Amino acid sequence: MKKIILSAIFVCTMTTVFAQESIEITTTYFLIRHAEKVRENPADKNPDLNEKGFQRAENWEKVLQHISFDAIYSTDFKRTLNTVEPISNKSNLIPILYNPSKVDFGQFQLENSGKNVLIVGHSNTIPQFVNGLIHQQKYQEMDDNEFSHLYIVTVKGNEITDLLLYCDF
Image (cartoon, rainbow, N blue to C red):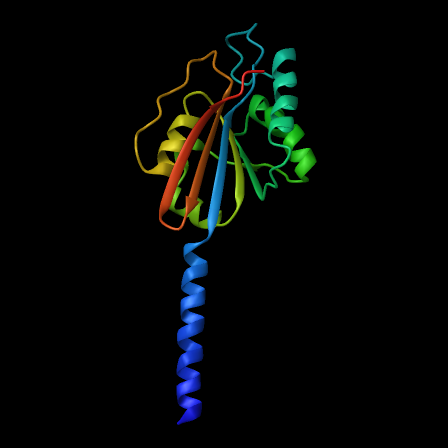
């Protein structure tokens, strides 16, 4: 009888511990738009960064230098990949390419649970990505000349918080 009671207490204790641990899992998403791009040829759908853009990419690395990223996501464009390059080099991570119009947010959140994740996209996709993560239509498309937004979304258990910072450098 003692063994049964001790086993029951052990199972109840472990169930409580595991339940508390699952509630305490924290996932943090950092989302930025690509840096300034070359605009000389409007027909070029895949321009590189301009000089100011390359400097901004270096500045993003400095701003985010103390974050230990577990995953980095980028669209498959020169400007997004070049924006994230200093961070991916420092983190020793290869960017995972994604298509913003095909993101399954439930699956995305499940795959990145408990991680620090950087997502780089575009003026019309990053606010919508944030909205998908927070499950509400809170953020509007960015102005085409806006490059200073840093969105931070934190998911802890069932609680989701979001923050928009302006990093104008």
